Image (cartoon, rainbow, N blue to C red; front, side, top):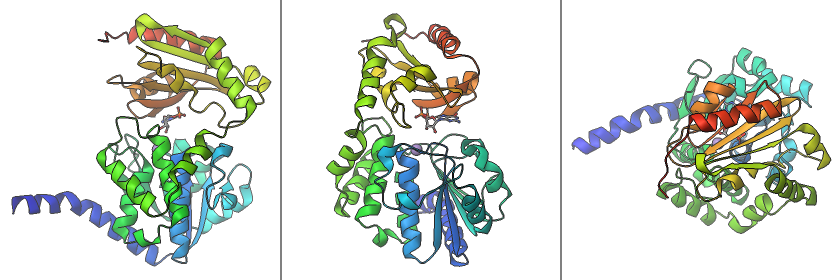
Length: 350
Ligand code: 5GP
Ligand code: MN
């Protein structure tokens, strides 16, 4: 009895949110699904999956990305109809102004959508956040489904879709978008955020038609020769390993990127190679892109890189994967990171 009551209390707030979304959708025709800047597999996969499902329910759905993204995501169904705000300014503005409902997927602060944020903030649409990052801004949406314990927005979205009663609408293409989201945000099911439930959902997605091997190929075995050479350059020439500090950093200037004909997405995953070195539990990748110095921070274990990103680089993210920006040069940022390595020196039993 006690257990039943407890379960009811636990589920109730979620059920109330689901009912609110349902009733908002009932009265709505135009729906916009938004994602954070430079959306990754989780953000874009979630957005395109939700878009497909709501389109099947006869809504007018548009996915808007604040800016462009990696070409290894272009295979996802619905990609060709995504509006890129910075490129399709007029259309993106119109659909956002006309929206009855706006979904905000895989982000929870308007700063994460850059120049697109004013339009979203000023819209009168009913707004729904579905996200797994820390510290959601509670003032920017009508319904916030936020769970930082879940590995990916795609997994959370799968739960939401199920609770909304739309699981029957998940066909092969949608299953593959969700699969890609979960796969990329768990580092192919290896991060500690991967749970039995993750694997259970993955099993369901495969049952629903997802070709798991194909999705892995499309995302991970799709390098251009320039991209793989850039990776070689990073590892051979640019990696500084501080074995005693259990830390490593790789940094690239805009010029270096240019010399490898850099395309968006080409440096994704580079930081993980530094973390693959035995004894390294704190890895940082620094790159100068579009005039800004961006950082990717990764850790293993208890080191909370989101706190470091927030404190020193105006950023954030998850405990073991975070990002931020620096207003110093690449070289100065690298030196600052080395100082941070020293400050966060840890004793690790190997
Ligand atoms: P990445 O290193 O792949 O760009 O990002 C890793 C994680 O950190 C992602 O979950 C992303 O949402 C978060 N992140 C990256 N850059 C920023 C940033 O500038 N601000 C905040 N708040 N989070 C970021
Ligand atoms: Mn995510």
